[in-house]
Image (cartoon, rainbow, N blue to C red):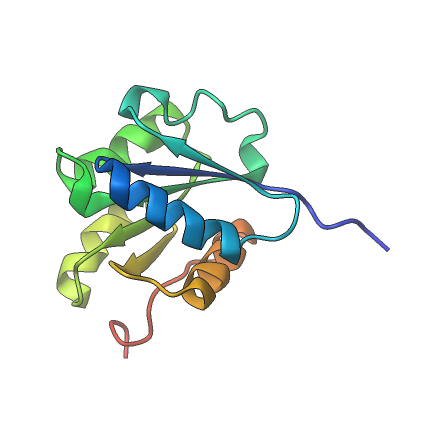
Length: 137
């Protein structure tokens, strides 16, 4: 029986209290052995990424000072194979689609539950797109 692949999850949020609380939720959503890192500076998003195929970058977009689309493109420019899970306050397809077009592999609404995070992380790590059903009905 194959061992489950351990992942590195990188959480980038421009607001430290929020990133600390969100990181705790992400840790609960992850499998045993996965590592969760809080990234404080956009220049360091991919510095710890040793194994790109086992890494996901979670961008907490409302708390980052530059535009959401620009942030996603910046990460993709650093490494096109980076898997990105975007979190934002958007609740309509019209506003979410530019994030996906910019390169996000998945999207979650601003306050995702542990279960939603678990599903999204699993989907994105498997190469699938994750989008909330209420937006894409």
